[in-house]
Length: 351
Image (cartoon, rainbow, N blue to C red; front, side):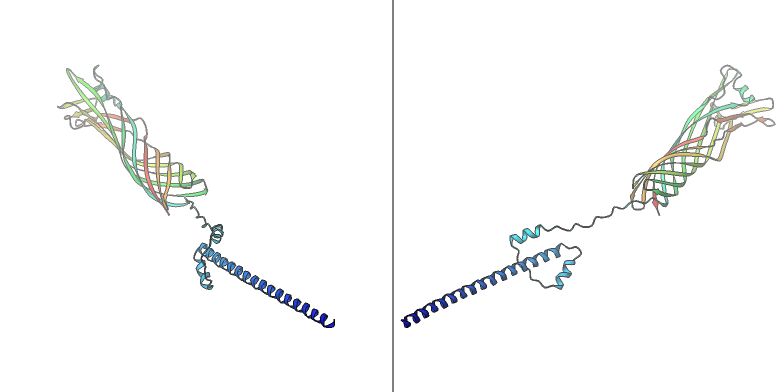
């Protein structure tokens, strides 16, 4: 009985120890598998980390990623589809916005211009008493009629000035210019005298030439955009005005008339019977406006209109007299000032 109990105890103990070993083996297997899974997950995370670092280095500007790559030697593994999707979701770094340059109009400038000018004139003739008698003694006779005419020509010159842009949209400034001019024109009118049965026609011619002119003007401008300027301008003007007049017999032959101490001696139909001129520097004023556009860095283009009004002078045409007498005369009266219009384009360089 005791032996049987002893063997039963041994058998139970053996079974218990066998089951314990089995449980220990299974636990060891589980721990080993867990360690392997953890190692695989750690390795996968390290690959993803390395791939993300490499992707970030490529996205960084100025080669910052290259310096970081030199400091760390991390192997890069091929990407799988999950890592590619993750990298694609990363935000890219936008380049810094470029500053838009604002044109500054403040400062001095110099430039040139070319264009055209035009004007309108009218000349009235006032004869002295002797000439009036010669050209009104018969009903058919009459002194010269008024002579309207136009002037026009090319103008061009240089300008210098400065601007002060005191606000984003406003500026004030001053500009001076000097211009050569080819503006000229002439007008003619007819006159008739009669001696007996002879009717003698005459032609009166008057002309004007603006040889040069200049201005000294203030400018006030508005800037609808940074590069476009619209402005009004006005100020002092000056110029050289030449005026000439002749009164010539139209048919050949000589004509000598005298009386009361006055006379005229018309030799032929080429030499003027009367002639006179005026040549002086006139002063006045100007007013206008224009647009100027900044095309490239320091260069601007402009289009401008000016109205110029200068003092005009009239003159007296005198006849070729007979010896020992006074010459007859004819006053050529220009009924308006030496006014003209100028339309021109130009270019300026700003310092």
